Length: 249
Length: 347
Ligand SMILES: Nc1ncnc2c1ncn2[C@@H]1O[C@H](COP(=O)(O)OP(=O)(O)OP(=O)(O)O)[C@@H](O)[C@H]1O
Ligand SMILES: [Mg+2]
Image 1 (cartoon, rainbow over the protein chains, first blue to last red):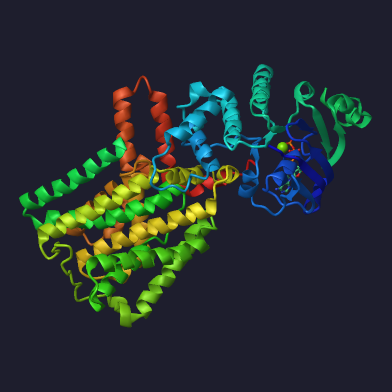
Image 2 (image 1 turned 30 degrees about the horizontal axis):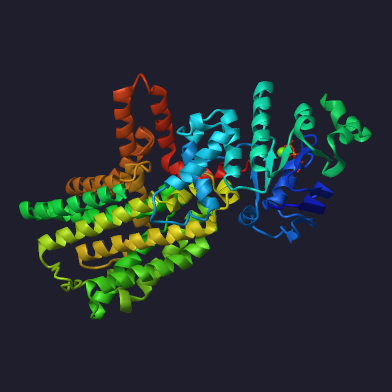
């Protein structure tokens, strides 16, 4: 399971605003990487380009030498990149396990079946396996639109996991959570990484979390890459201290 | 497998019931009402595949009802085709036209989709009027449709004709029932609930919507054929926008949250029609009132209302909160289907 992601000279402008400017970064397979930066730095925009939701103004994004730019989101998903959202994005009328089973079937390209019953036991089994990994087994029969905030975020990640990604992008997995809940979330994400071994790229504001689990940190500010490297290196970077850590702590 | 057997048993029971019923009941008017319900009920069910299950608010569905009816009637009148062959051709043609129309329309969402389907339907309606040599123009196809015997079935016999209608309706409804409960049906509901997320889970939203559009149109064509046989003709108002509007009204009246809601809505509308026509010429006024009462008074379909009410009666204390939730879910009903896609900007 390879999955080397190379982003080169990536730029995105919205009219006059350069949301991402000339960003170059590389991700080795299986890495745990964090993308940090103040609000509006362009973090979500970066994810949107990697996943094909937005097309860049310039630059390239290659996965194992294959260019991703120009591919539709569905094609990028099939190459092994999936994502969870800053605001959990679910299927309101589905129960948790139905939504998971649907995601599993989608991954197996079995959604275009008009004859079979939904959800079939095979898809269910895999769905429940992921739910137990992520700790949602006790709400598997609840409807998505009745879940708590934390469970919504977890399910959002679980849906992305159903696609068995080589690279999993998490947009602020702990957004809107208290300290304890955040810890629990990160703990679960770490265990998922241990179990599945995919690359993990997450956007995060809490520096304790970032320096606790990331092996590599990318700092964005005003769309540009300010610094990148191992956490210890980045932490010592004078401009990072001044621009971001200084104001955040 | 077990579920399938049970479903087959239900289908067979209903058809057997129809056989017994047609032997017992002599009243032509009761039978006629049921036959009429088979056509319009199936039309409403097919439309609900788009509106209720996929979140596609089509205002042009009657076009395929009309296309099925006209093709069927014309083939029976002008060729030596038997009923099965004429029906197969009508379904195939309607499906093919739906593939082209759908390919253009399902790229759009919300009100743009609604208006484009409406516009194409008006175009089709104008064609029906213009090609009077083939379609009879404004008058429609008058003078009757032959009902040749096929496979030992004689539709000139009122009893056999009645059972035939029930059988086609039940078979088609069963097919739709299976479709909405299949993985494909799940994909439709994913698209309805959150198209953006569906895309990021690898669902081919365009292809899935297009398939739903073609399927719904094919079933509408079957409904059109049953109706054409019933009235022994095909008329331009089959494909007029008011027919599409009535389909939506039936869905609203019955409710989008249960599979059978649209059929109940169709039945209520037919009933309302019969009563209103008996007492007054102001049909529009009473339909308008009925719409007002259901949308403002009940704020959901009749089936949803009954279900929520019985929920409330039997379990008001324990699940008060839950049933309220469902009520509010149902409340949005049709509106929700139409505007759901607007809450997907959170990327
Ligand atoms: N679709 C868009 N059209 C126009 N401007 C956009 C669009 N998406 C993002 N922007 C702008 O680009 C900049 C970067 O936005 P982005 O959402 O990537 O920031 P972020 O780093 O994820 O911030 P936050 O921490 O608040 O989530 C912002 O100024 C934002 O307003
Ligand atoms: Mg963001």
